[in-house]
Image 1 (cartoon, helix red, strand yellow):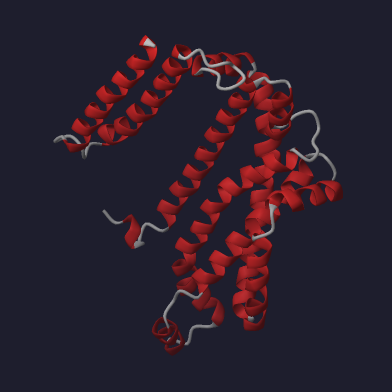
Image 2 (cartoon, one colour):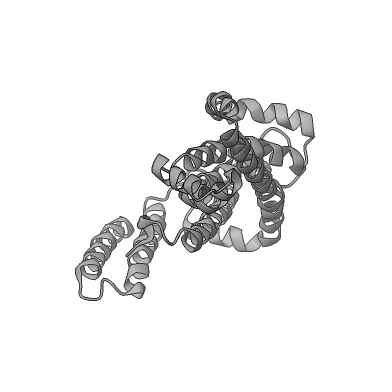
Length: 281
């Protein structure tokens, strides 16, 4: 039990340190802003290690972080092959195809009002369909390789991007559009110079939501059929073998990939929509 008490003592000490950093005179420095969440995350990992070893938790219930790290290091080649199959081939390709298709469809729907009125209710209906119901159908249609996972991802990301883009294109006021008409601007000039820039925060909102949906869709689709590699395949087979350390290693890879993907989209958003009030300091 000494390790367990040490874990809670560490939690109290790091809590006090974070409070001091957050309320101190150097709280505005970038290094301190990075240090506070880093201390919080490292404290949780160390507490996890101490409590699991202190309570002698079985491996099949919850492996210690050091055990997961050892498994991660010993299976780097397998994890890399799974990452390439699931994220690069399945999630990323489906994300690009789905987002481009949704963006172009949103522009067409914006131009033709009857199409917008018909598509949005269908989009909301399709977005509510459970992925565990549609994934096996798409896997049977497109085969067991990465193409079927990309198809599942396309379905998952298409409607969030479509709905957000259509909403963004209608975000300009009537006065702004009237002003463009007084200048003699055509539909396409109004679209590219006024409505698309105004829609960018909505578009990136849909793109950021879809980053996590893409990875989830690719992993879940692999549960219904896959070649002998991929994150979803590895997780399902490792659970059957009670190799929970390997499952956690795959979860770490998925979390890192998903966080990095979301971070890249947020970085691009900050560069394109720097004028938006949400980015002002």
